[in-house]
Image 1: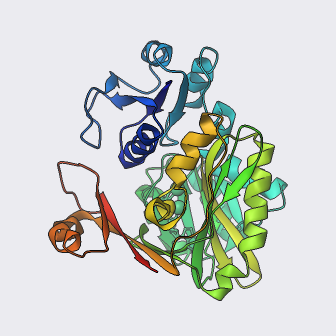
Image 2: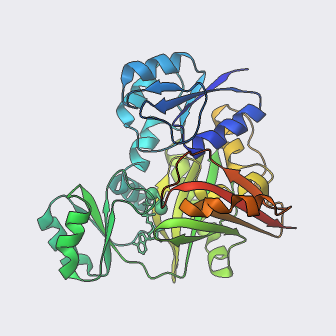
Length: 349
Ligand code: ATP
Ligand code: MG
Ligand code: MG
């Protein structure tokens, strides 16, 4: 069997590892020296993910390398790709880790985003507010997740506070979208260019963090599925993408509005572990290993994934006592507010 290298030791890397092990692969994990998020045995540690020497040594021990998160530098990944296949590519990573690049890329392919402006300076923010109007959201171009690195502006009076809140980092100002629903397209693209995409879940957020994903989504989302999935397919093809790619959308009144993308498996796809014939994790492993993709058919009439965030994880004993609940705990030793500790999936047959 061959060895799959996974950069990152959070819950996504862990669930990718489980799927890879099931298919008979050996797994090699690159964890930050500061300590992995999940309890990982025998992880290869790197001082930093842009440590080229550590990446090269890691790569030598792998037949293919993938990554579980987008906040790694693309340049050392491109260097690594000269000696071992890295999937998805460093070029895809560079676009999907940057809000400006991803919006430009998706708009070029016919996708529609909320109005947005580049904000490099405090002065740019005033200009952007004048052009876009409020309410609006200021978002750092890189490194944001779970609503971190964002500030909302109800009016132009909030500009100073918002600028301070994001630490004056390079950002974009985005118009606030009026929407009833959020959904996502999780799509796997194989080595041969074939696609397998899942039915879109309805995604419910609380405090900017995904709280639950439900399938099937309501009719307003279902009616936008075809258009959103076609866009995701064009994005994947244009990047010659190999692996799982996720696009987040708002269901706007006139069709899907693109929010952001992730070059990886996604929290809104965790329901597929038990709720689809082939999980997003297995399809990612299949794709990067050049295997045929598996079916994305839903296994029940209704599937709901609920995140266990912070103290909610303390309910795990109750949940594991539900005969039909599929409990996942990520092996994080410390509970922190807003930290994703696990999730539970319930399926109605
Ligand atoms: P993730 O953890 O999904 O990577 P993130 O920190 O990158 O999140 P976004 O997805 O950009 O952040 O925003 C988080 C949430 O904030 C969205 O899912 C949505 O609920 C809300 N939101 C973001 N942008 C807008 C917008 N332009 N209009 C209305 N709501 C928005
Ligand atoms: Mg994001
Ligand atoms: Mg998001």
